[in-house]
Length: 344
Image 1: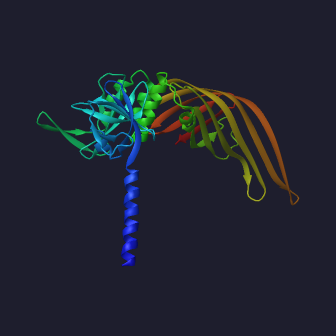
Image 2: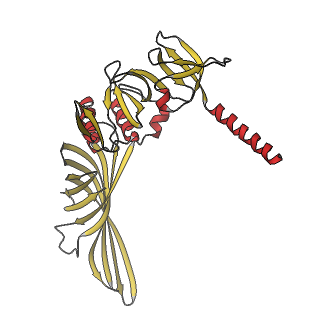
Image 3: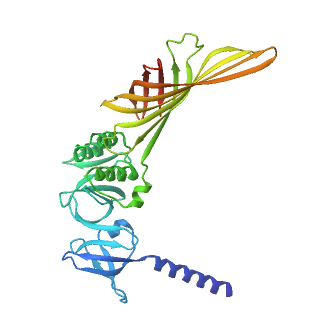
């Protein structure tokens, strides 16, 4: 009996805690722009978007607010719902991004879809494409694919070529969709809180493997190997970047006797002057340092000498894009060298 009593007490405590979790504080803005602080039943998204169950503090009775009566709901935890006329009816849509374009999320019939809307214009319905789906239109079934996202988003953001290119490469997860809309809003002049900007990666780094050669240095035993690093800012129409790589070339080698190693480290500012389709052309200018390590044995004693030779670096490069990677051929006229790289 004691065990049963304890079990009932624990169960009641859990139920009490659960019921408290389901109540959230919010402010309702009605259609006539009046606002009211309320307590809201914190239900699933699919329920909240069709009606709000709210009560004034101190009251025990809940009242139902419909999208036609409620203009917006702002939760104290940061969630914001807007009444939006969708393709057929009005819903309270969860706002994910606010700005030049508002991005909304909606759950219907067990699936998640999205809308984007500029001011009070008709919202653009982004059909879910995480899995293949079919919809019935005029008595016929039509397959929904990623083309739906690409077509609608590129039309809405056609004045920014770099973002429309990113749309074509996106897999349309929710985080990618948020990032695309936020990036376009920033392009249109929206400013987001400092905390959001700090979380955003301001510089992107791309790495790769390369083989290098100095065609006017016949004593090289084989093409060199190395790694490549690209640094550029993640903002619209950014054409400048910083490129560097480290290459190792073997000039002379005799096992147990002698080796001569040439290490090249150029640092160059790049400017993308042509980009169309899969092809991108760059101009590069900067400086390069060559480290020569000469090691040999003489009368049973190992001698190692190092020399550094600074030089200017001026060249051009061509990238051929393969999905999210690229094949790169880059040549430097002043150092008489070239590299062939695969950039991740």
